[in-house]
Length: 292
Image (cartoon, rainbow, N blue to C red; front, side, top):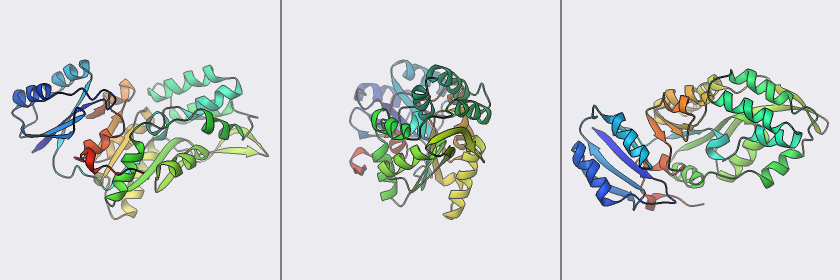
């Protein structure tokens, strides 16, 4: 048995009974049920339709997300989340670079690295080198003035932890940011890269080893093993090429507003919803969400 989940952007909440009925009738889905009025609906699906991706494209054009996944085991015990452009709405290295006067140059490298056009580790070293002599205090300025949380993140972490889940923030970004974000959202732990410092300024180097794509997958294996679980017990969420290994290893890998080259390699894609979609995909209804 599979489960079909249909999602609208929460700020629109424009999923109607008529639209839901249309999809249910087309595929013979059973027991349709609202998880959140106008936002999230799920139904049991005896078989995966042969035209799944054709239908997915049509619902994308209408502004909705459509996911079909196995029903068994979809409520997970572990959350692994990327930070930049996933849990927060910015790329921290780009924000630091803007203060260093090299914002456009670094942003161009970031975009190509996240699309998988450049090796992530090499691209990270190249970007950080351009931050040489930047005052460490700029981190606090960026956190205070530029960083915003993606809607649904607080509820996602709090709800999973309330149901005996474990939440880890694993980022190719930098520890001063993951520390602040993990504290604010309630993650159990965080992992990221360390920027080398000389006095009160960055040196333009990253302390080895670098947290890249393989390190994220390794973190998933390590964390789940430590908890007596397996990667199949985890849901991972990310958007960039350095998240792909983690997304493909996890029991459920959610490509969240992902770069096209990344989304094309993932079966679970959320292009319109926010982080609350990760809860709906596990079968949580809105009235089960834990607020912090």
